[in-house]
Amino acid sequence: MKKLDTNKVALVFGLLLGGGHLIWSLLVFIGLAQILLDFVFWMHMISMPVKITGFTLTQSLILVMVTFAVGYTGGWIFAWVWNQMHK
Image (cartoon, rainbow, N blue to C red):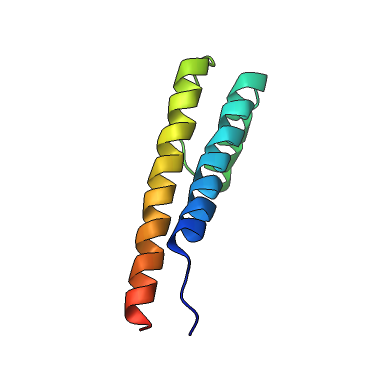
């Protein structure tokens, strides 16, 4: 079994998680986040009063950076564990 490159796997995980939150930030910025969230709750038969607040660039950057870091760390750990189990 081929070894996984921990850095490449970590980057993929980080880009997926951070990129997803970048898209969310863009939805908040253009005003579509509340509509999407309301639709998702409706599909799941959930009634919960959640209100999306206004877009803030600083919060958006923090969100994307933190989720990228969490994804990177999770991806690195995943690849490391995979490699340990397939020696």
